[in-house]
Length: 108
Length: 300
Image (cartoon, rainbow over all chains, first blue to last red; front, side, top):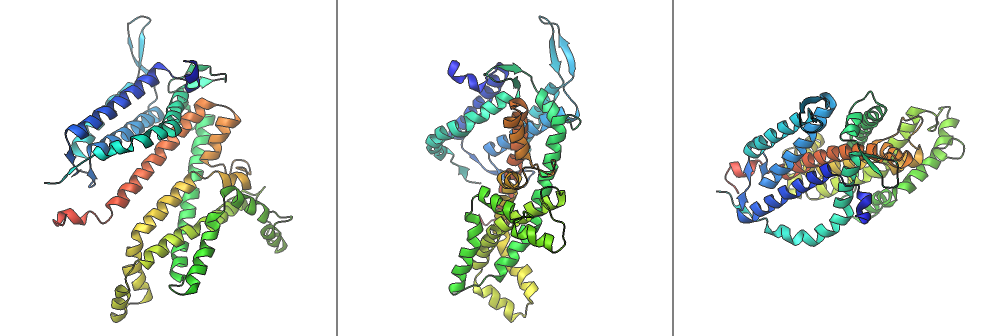
């Protein structure tokens, strides 16, 4: 582990990247197994699944940043587990992002 | 029924992907890791969650204030140079000769500023503008204009904008020239028969035909001016005060000057997202410009 110490890995960022890699892997498999056609949605641009994933990811980043900027990250809930798990309101942004991702994949 | 898109060719990109992994993806992942932590060096990191992002997006903190100030400064700079370089580039392209030896001479002269490295451009203008030995600075002061880019904010801005216009207008002009050259003579002949004015020829033939190259020019110039570092750094060093400190200069100050890797990482990620969004919008507009009419009429 010494040689990657400079990368400063943490469990949360590792989970984030593993999930991102898995998403890309699934999308790759989908593209090979079920070839798709471009379609024009509400943005009036032809998009493939990959384009929609890109838009959804960018939207996710923007939603989280806006949430941090305008709402903050106060604790909204404490789960009585161990010393008490504090749930940040940022998870609401994550929920909104997931909903928006579904909407983007359906309509864009 | 639309044709399905075969994405299998992407597998051919795998070797490049490996190289990019080491040159871009791993460093980017490291930046994401840094943005969540604080460090005092020696590869010791402390978890900070989204703390840096909170600070960055809150204009009342020092980091947030610096970020938003340099962001607006940078956007204003990009807007100003685009507003000057694009119309000026079009005018230059329109007045360039169409044939004969003058074309080659003109193209070489236009290409010269583009070939000069950024730091050299900065040094040239840094000396050019000096009131004691610089040709421009000395002349302006002799004419009674109190010009000093080291102490006066307006002068510093004017110098950097003029420098950028000098450096990059040729790029816009050359792109527009290429667009103009691709217009067949028949268009002009038709315009002549119709007795179209010079202005009508410009708005009805030349401008629409330059549409694509202009979009490319705007994209290139926006991206380049939005990440500008070397030239203002060499000329003004971000001063006087912070008046010409653009985002990239602020970023380097935070990352390498203060060694606040966490703050710098958060800033660079937000910076990166802004650039990604702008690029995507430009690219989408560019690739779909004129394509909208196709499928609806059934001309696939």
